[in-house]
Image (tube, rainbow, N blue to C red):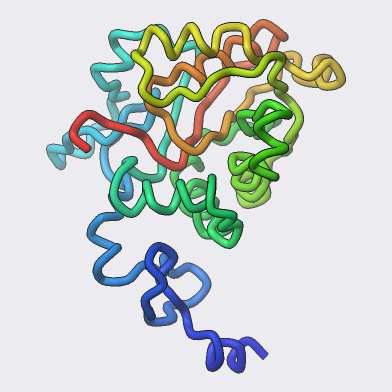
Length: 244
């Protein structure tokens, strides 16, 4: 049946829809034009946010931290990102987020699971950054939850889609300065009262689509720590960096 389906519905590029070769279940499925713009983070990266860092090929075991994380207070301990935000990654994330392209969630979750595997810990909870009910009603689904559930299954971890809730509606983060972004998210998230007892002492992996300033994830991590969670790690589909 799968062979018949491939005959009538040949594999297409996830980004532009052009035909691509069928490389099997683990294929990336990006065409020759979109692949060069898909900046997967596979080499040296910041251990705190996942941003790519220069790799001198020495294979050092040192923990690397980028300038942004050195100069900021990060309430989480470690982080990874699958891609750099821009080009193909930007198109895919916007399509998943605003274009009802739920078919993108499985392959993008697979990319993120590979990147986030070093963060996995025994007893860890995987949780998405939540949407406010007003935004959820408009968008119909939380794109981060669509990804986080699949990441948790791949890594064999506990998924709690409702671990965090938004206690107040916030304005969009776009076109705001860094200070305004942090102020906009301050005290906007909390651990769901039903989950509070179960999170005590347990490590948590926060999943989101994009990290730019880190303001949203900062607020989410503070909420978890205030509820008594263990160390918080961050896994995002894409990390915005200054060069892109």
